[in-house]
Image (cartoon, rainbow, N blue to C red):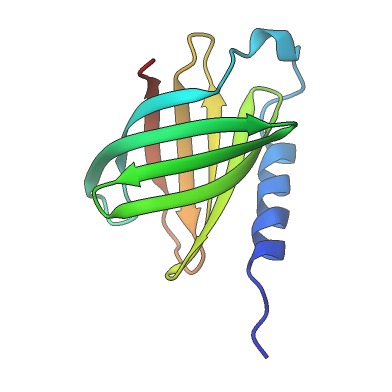
Length: 127
């Protein structure tokens, strides 16, 4: 019987939150909702670009990446200036941890299940 991947993704995201920066005043984190231009380096070292739309529902963030390879949707949480999110697609589960800068730029590190590599991504607010 196949095991769902979401529980592992949630545990990994929670682990990233604990391992990331110490608690800080949430008032120093800018509003994250909006559209961002993304540029990154994937797990094979190739560059990519696209857009990221972030929407907030309560304490949960919905992320939608529109990349050259297609659309990916995910879910995330914000704690201590770090937005941690996960997504699930046919090739596996992925996680990203974005450090939120005071000007609202997101600096991310990410990976996918089954990989031993990490990718990087910078998201700059468009609106």
